[in-house]
Length: 235
Image (cartoon, rainbow, N blue to C red; front, side):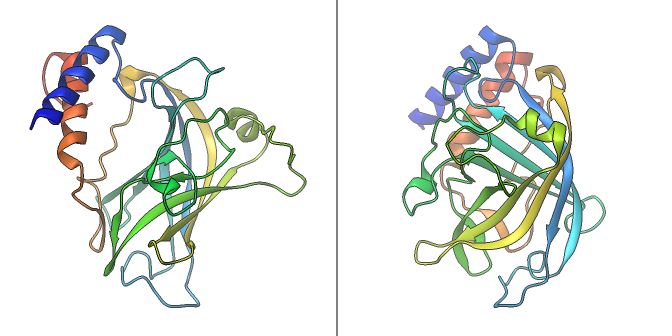
């Protein structure tokens, strides 16, 4: 596939040039908790979503292109849920800064502030019997500034946990919350010790990304690995 070969080559060259992943080269690792609450309305048809539970998470926040902080960039929020379906199981969810509307949720939106707006999976997930987009909406504390000037992720985490509502929606549905995400601790994430998130390898029964554009994504990430390491080992 021509587009896959182009994506592989471009990612490989960029990774070799910067000696870091081609996309999301540097980030911040956060520890926290994801809580799935008991539902009072109709369930999702997914065992993990339809039972209450609390899980430890490792979250990586990063800038997609690694542009200087004074410039807007696509922002990534990668969430790893530990033991989501029992010991040894892992769920990875990848969110990108976007808009909440029916079409905007499928397009990356460069922005300056980590907490200035929602993040979405861009591509659809199979959630039970339907395809839905997943999203993470920042929860702003009461009294937070409403003039568009938001504190940075680091400033917020230095004072209190940073919270997100995780929601899902099909094109003909309103957003419905399925979990709460709380980020509590933070540390830098150098490229040499970054966590590798893969939503295709780490998903759950009834909750997994659709196959659209998987080949293109895999080609770009393989090219990135090859550019950094000279082989095809996982990052």
